[in-house]
Length: 331
Image (cartoon, rainbow, N blue to C red; front, side):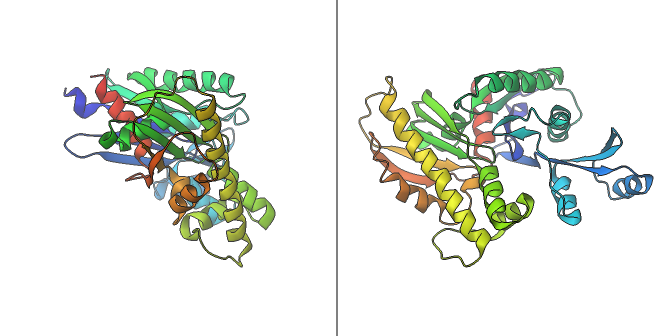
């Protein structure tokens, strides 16, 4: 068995789970929505789901639909999907959360056992009051993967972005992942993490906040955001206007936190040249996001010089790719 070809990077995101593999010279990615939906059980509905080959199972008198298909059925029935995770970690209010996460991970990794293959999964950075939830989250995910037979390590999500995107600067710079549950950032020097943190505002915060003021469901607002929202425009539409306001709130939280950490950190190396910032994650996808982030970075007046702000090559895949690079480095 070629260990390099069988290693896996796994992005455990609030919104999506992504795997990265490199069976040859190119990377391969698979994605599943990190969500589920429950419908009242009936034999007729179960038969329809089976004929349509929709993954599902019967649980406590309901039909549980995990992953990508959950959003399609939520839109069809005008229901809200449920999330196994919130703000980057397992949702303590979702009793089915761990079961759903296990099913989605299994659907991505396949039914075969790990047989000692190396797998590295992503972990969010620390935010205020998150230490206990991170400890439980890390142990629960590690247990799932270990039971499947994998040799498991983990990596900070922001550092994974640095590994995936900043090879040309010898893995020196700031990686920022703007995800569904939170935004994670890491300053690394020659691949060594100097500090990392998370801001508890991400795509879900934007969706729910905009939905609240617009009188719409969060699932519908997310669909509008992903299909048509962009920066640098005047919006008559209330949803688009609300999305713009809460996006700026999220970006402001990241830039202010960057300044705070850079100002307080005692172990920041003496950099002899400006360093890059790379942006990734689904919440960084709207047109104009990079320009708006760069513009809002100016008043933050960071205590280090920034050479450029750029988007990741594949924003949705950066964390999984970086996790795979970390796994391969251990072989």
